[in-house]
Image (cartoon, one colour):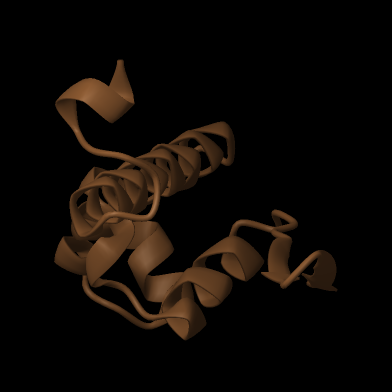
Length: 95
């Protein structure tokens, strides 16, 4: 279905779709973790050193954030985050 309506894997259209989807999921994870910690966006922003509006943007779509900001957010939430990087056929785990 994705191949037909969005494009084949590896095409710019499909890559953009997959990227947006991952960023949306990441934003939802940030919001869920924040709520589990009973923090407002403003409180989390103060812990991270950013404005409430930046937290709101992260939660709605994390594609405007730097990796550094995302890592700070999860650290402030006391949540573990792991990245997996695949180089050719080998995965490199970054934590």
